Image (cartoon, rainbow, N blue to C red; front, side, top):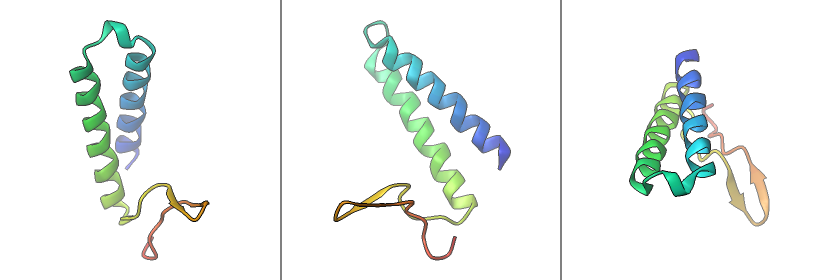
Length: 70
């Protein structure tokens, strides 16, 4: 699981760098890295059996989105 967390952090850094320099990067590349990050986060959630949304907005109340089975 630690490996997935490291991969998430690396992909977030890549996205942050691309967003900071958006004029220098092709938007397709930003989308590609964003999709990779989504996939890694999904795999992480599946491995921890947490199927909820990370942040769920419901009537102005924020929750951590963790499902009852987490």
